[in-house]
Image 1 (cartoon, rainbow, N blue to C red):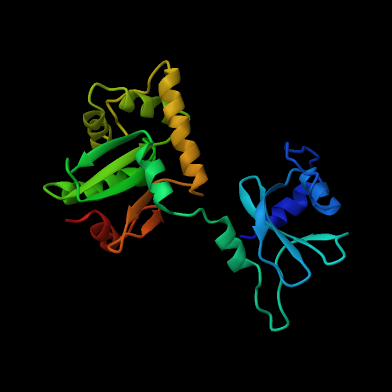
Image 2 (cartoon, rainbow, N blue to C red):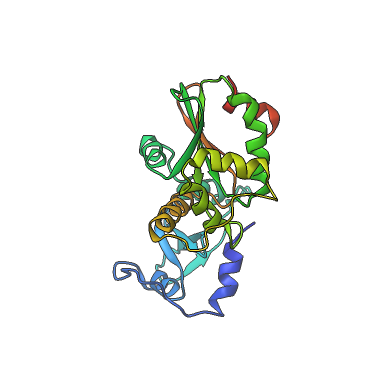
Length: 252
């Protein structure tokens, strides 16, 4: 879906600006920023044009300053043969880098580990306690973790339901978080782990930080699996995975 059409429509409805240092931008770009667009960085563009990676409501928006520097356009550029000059650069510019710094950030998140105690492989899964697909993935991986060399680290987030944060807190703050998570997932839909009545501030902050990490990686839904392939390259897979991919990522 081309989210910039939503942005164009919204320009006529909102004049709410986000705080940005816009002094160095040309006037047409400043005008869009004044209407709610966030400039995230440069975007490759044809000669004479200046491209910007914009963000509106969490969606990537391609913005092009025309050669006269007095006009701006939002949308897709095509060349004389009809080739899309926007989509590829937009995806590359808006996709967060999955590098060792990312892997380190994942390791510092608030997670619950299951599987191998001394793993040869580590897999991170962004998990919401109320997410049925997280539950399905959890079920599918359990047999593969028995006696294996993989450790799964569930990064607990709250994005699905009003009780997500409170139940995630109850699991994280349990005397044995791994056991609490197992109890919850084993009886999904009838969980014996009740949401915390009063969400402790410190635990709430841990969950908020996990949510922010998830957002920074461009992940919009759960479950989301982040792992290293056989060549050590960091990969990401969002949603319930097919059996062959589950076996490849979580298997012995």
